[in-house]
Image 1: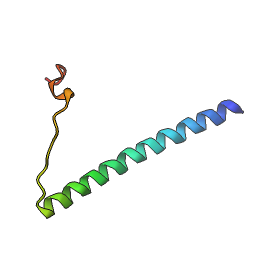
Image 2: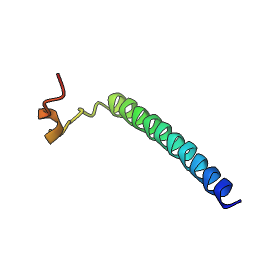
Image 3: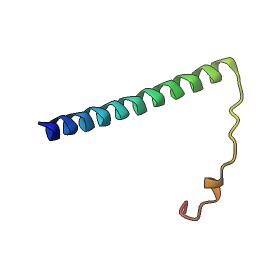
Length: 56
């Protein structure tokens, strides 16, 4: 019984995390559209991942 509950909890949390990721992507896309309409310039900060050797 406990195993089934744990499996259901893990499945629900995975679905919720995917939904949160999609929601975040939608919000970022809408914010970029708003910035473009208002004429706000996109400013990107450099990251230590930009110089990662795996980005070939």
